[in-house]
Image 1 (cartoon, rainbow, N blue to C red):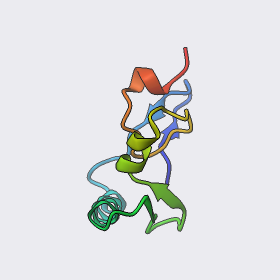
Image 2 (cartoon, helix red, strand yellow):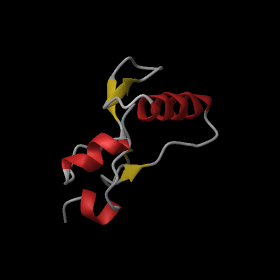
Image 3 (cartoon, rainbow, N blue to C red):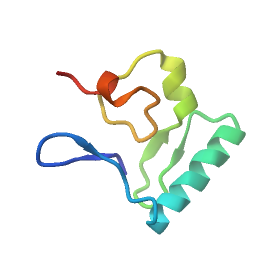
Length: 78
């Protein structure tokens, strides 16, 4: 699950009370602890990069990555 965009094209953050968000957080923490670049999303089966991997890239790719470490204004084009 990537962040989705609303009708204005802005990224929407996932609902933190959603159980799928909790399972994502667990998978992310485990990947970080094991030194992996990413993990398989427990809901969709997609590969998701960790915040560590994305930070090491050095710049935002503008793809709406779930764990993007860059400020929102650095992620979205004008």
